[in-house]
Image (cartoon, rainbow, N blue to C red; front, side):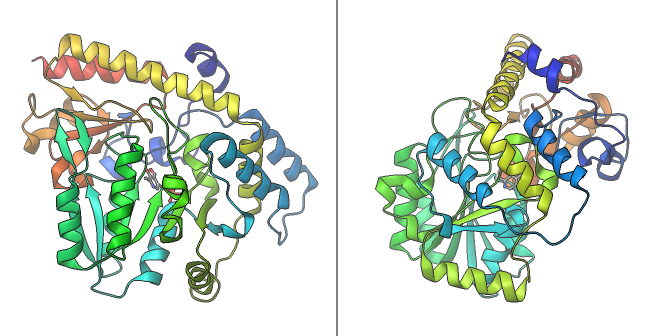
Length: 393
Ligand SMILES: Cc1ncc(COP(=O)(O)O)c(C=O)c1O
């Protein structure tokens, strides 16, 4: 399905639906009248089968205590095998009420206060919060930025681990905000360093279905699963099918001892062992019937990205847009045009954009913005036009 058709079928205005992205503008940015391109969800309706199955359940009219449907597990297991070549066993699958919640839990379970947790910056800022808010020590290893293309600094990565006796590394794969889909050799090196240094890996793969270039490789299948017992994979249908409000996420834990500790925490400390009945219905329908919808969504994101980079290259040749291999979040270096200290002023007050500011993702992001491209073309056109008009001045 091309962008035009996809937008015609699924495009929707979201204002006045209590959505964070549009209705939350005033709370977050202090004004309403902005083009909203921050927070990572899509301005598209979910696949029709998701809506149908939810309606069917609603019509039954009883919303009492529920069990996790067996068919839900099968839909996820089949999806992972078909799309990522990862053969997940049912007994490895656990519920978390969001990937971020899962990260908070794991940090709590597998580290003590003051232990060190490593992240590769710039990276999704709730990773930072999960460490800091739990009174653990947050260690940064900056990615190397070569003209917008980011790679790991393996030496720095390992040195930081050794020096700080790091206990957990939070990997973002694909990486929000810099859009990389990590290659096999990169993942292998990272996982190998972690294993050699007894560092547990949280592999956040929430964006793993949103691949524009290259192929996503689950960390747990690298080298035939060589490192899988040292990894907790977190994923969800939320980014893939725009279901974040359902708060239905998945932890895949292959190691039995890690699973036991996780279960003990989830059932006795957090007292949360399964999720909302609608979340399972939405997830199952999406994993079972959502493939064509996803192809249309990816074409739409790609269309928006190509439109934006062509225009920016023509009009603002020194803006650096990182190649978008995965996610729908474009990472843009504006340092050649705007003094980083004035960035918010220019982007919000003059360009009228609500974006995620690079510095939220770590110091290395100062002077950058992150733009959400999972929206209709008209907003991408407006945002690009405003950027060009203001920055050319
Ligand atoms: C890398 C990453 N992890 C987790 C999340 C959020 O997950 P959840 O809403 O399930 O907590 C996001 C959302 O943007 C994300 O980009």
